[in-house]
Length: 444
Ligand SMILES: NC(=O)c1ccc[n+]([C@@H]2O[C@H](COP(=O)([O-])OP(=O)(O)OC[C@H]3O[C@@H](n4cnc5c(N)ncnc54)[C@H](O)[C@@H]3O)[C@@H](O)[C@H]2O)c1
Image 1 (tube, rainbow, N blue to C red):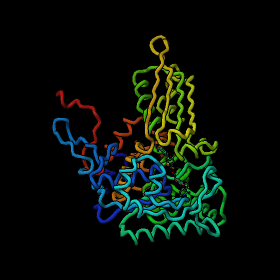
Image 2: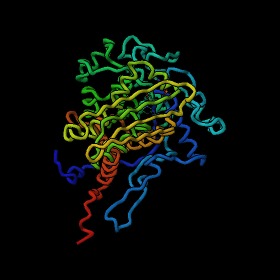
Image 3: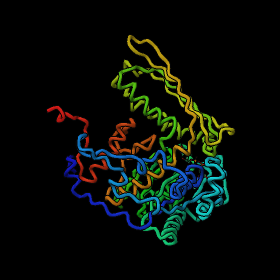
Image 4: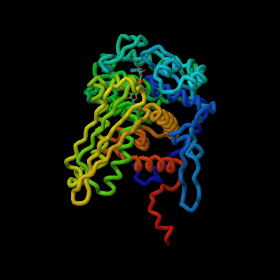
């Protein structure tokens, strides 16, 4: 393939965003219902889509003197909020209104105003296996003779949803609980082995992988909002490329890790050293309860820990970062609900090695931070599909703690590099000059 972006671009023709866009969500919990309720609230003028690039951000085009800064939503053809229709699966039977009420993220008076559209969303029965999520169980679960049959049932659900909702296209985004930590196995190495594994109900095939397989088989792009092993597998990559479907993941970058990927590049940019970063969290929502299980926590810990190493590059800067001690803790603390508190203690050092400390105390709201990411991801994934982009969408790294990359490529974690990559991809899609920030021409 050519490395010249202009040659690569020649084939980019973006189909218009016509008709309804279906958003299918495995896991109608706090994040999913906050997203759906938020979209309804924005449509009704009851709130603003704060935190969403697709709704609020502009993009600079051309030279700084050109004064061309359209909204992203006016620059690329995205589906509008009025075109979105939602559906999903959960192990509980609660409709989206009840689930949003239980999640206690949005206020009851606001939810009351959104009651009708939320009540209309009833979860389809889930593919679930308690081996993968230990702390919860529910009645709304599919039964099948093997995992292949379960995958077929999810494909049927997608078809039925499309027919009933009138959606012309669908994207899927995992907002389900974090599954237990697993490494890729033989069954994940090719589509052939994966399909044989489905028929044999191979224990290494997780429920999330069954949804992803069903999505890709149905021509539906898939985003992974949790850290579990779902699409980072040769079988899924093969399927996505073969069928020309975009995928991305994993684990929404919302609170503490978001701040980490803002702060760490700053210290490194100034060549300040670091020998410790201790992060601890208390949260009391169902996500927190699931993460009490060591298997689910281990999955989360992996994505949370991975960011610092790749931003700081201790192999290139041993004087600054080789002895870095990085720890992440999460504790379930019910009184806080979704209003999480994340503390960070950062031990840095400067000139001649003199030590300093930084403390960060982020009293955040998990689902309030995650909802705009869900919205942006489904709109951008749909755009990518209409632009004929397939496989891993690295330009969406901006949204993830553990961005998917081509095998052998290290992920970019720096939020500002990620943002530049995202915006340059949009410019590239529309045939605009990429922005390098060189700027020498202003001084000729
Ligand atoms: N909120 C954030 O800031 C944030 C950030 C990064 C990642 N995440 C991840 O997003 C996911 C959702 O978070 P949440 O706060 O909404 O959690 P939640 O517990 O409120 O919702 C998850 C829902 O998924 C359902 N579920 C579990 N397994 C399922 C399956 N196999 N099929 C269908 N439904 C299933 C559960 O019943 C639950 O209703 C979690 O994995 C979380 O780790 C959240």
